[in-house]
Length: 124
Image (cartoon, rainbow, N blue to C red; front, side, top):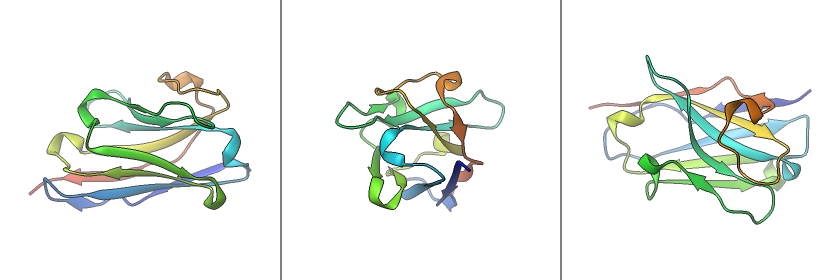
């Protein structure tokens, strides 16, 4: 059974850092591209970052470039999203999702499985 479980979300002050984890089970992570998405209250879900299979290019949405870093540890079946210099506008539920495409895709409908999400709140 394919399962994705996000963790690491919490309340943090502006300027702080968090590392989100997405633990995969029921499949071999090596063969999947992983995306991180987020949904803020009253807004549509948006792609934040993506890391493809193999050595392809990662993707970051403009508002997080230079602050967020995506990485994967296939041996641990885990994908990470390191988030630095957090801003109130980063407040959202963060989701990880997977697909079998070789390169990053930004379209939600192209992802096959999703986690349940983890809440990130940036506030003083």
